[in-house]
Amino acid sequence: MTPSSDTDFTLDETLDAAIRDAGARLARAAHPMALTGAGLSVESGIPPFRGPGGIWTKYGEPPMDGYQRFLRDPAAYWRERLSPKQDWMRALGDAVREAKPNPGHTSFVELERRGMLAALVTQNIDDLHRQAGHRRVLEIHGNHRLLRCVECNTRFDPEEIAVDTAALPPLCPHCNGIVKSDIVHFGEPIPQDVLRACFEAVAKTDVMIVAGTSATVYPAAELPFEVLRQGGVVIEVNPEPSDLSAAATISLRGPGAAVLPRLLEHAVAAREGRA
Image 1: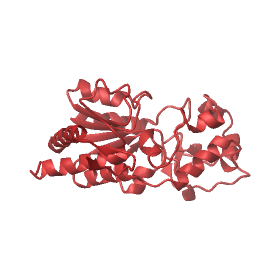
Image 2: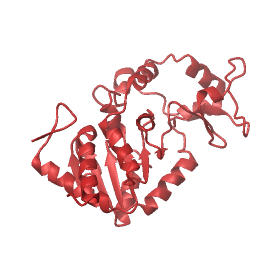
Image 3: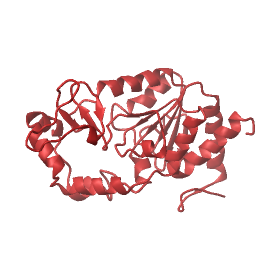
Image 4: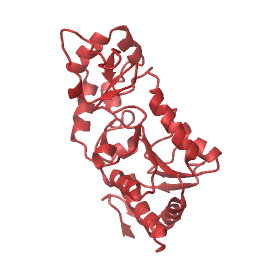
């Protein structure tokens, strides 16, 4: 048995052989990419939204028309943002601020550094891929650390936008559009610049790693199936079976923080002819 980076998980010989196969395919890929979801964040201590221990399970779900409420009264949205009254918002904010990248995140960084990951799409808003050092990240649901103009989609660090509580909402210095959090709310379309970049990356992809996602939230869930339709390889990394498992080329059953470092090792060995 090979000890993993997760104290409650070990890689047995059968799983390690499957990871070796996945690593060899990744090493041969011309344009590999990755898709990550909430499971990878959970391994960094951020609770999921739903299910046992979920933030919304504990505190109740937010309104399903959040974006429409923002559009109706952007000033009220900003007053709530500046002084949150909902317990789930405070709980999520505390968890995200305390979280650190795990070995799954850093494995993706090393794959990128070695030229074995051309793009990474994440459904997570926690900024952990960036904090780990990843450079090419497509955040399909936004980033909690950023602000975004709803008109021109320009992103800003919070210190770039002056927020006057007497003159809410703040406006974009480029186009005078309304600025909101970069997080995509319920009822809000995925920003077109990110969505377009995702599908442009998928169109070139021959191997996709899908880690920590149940593959149920669209449009992100569509991306691996598009790779499969193109004849590409999909490598799933997940502790539990998902809607993608039956279709995936290789399904690696285990936590990303344990499986992804081993996948990196096998891919590097195959690239260097040591497999």
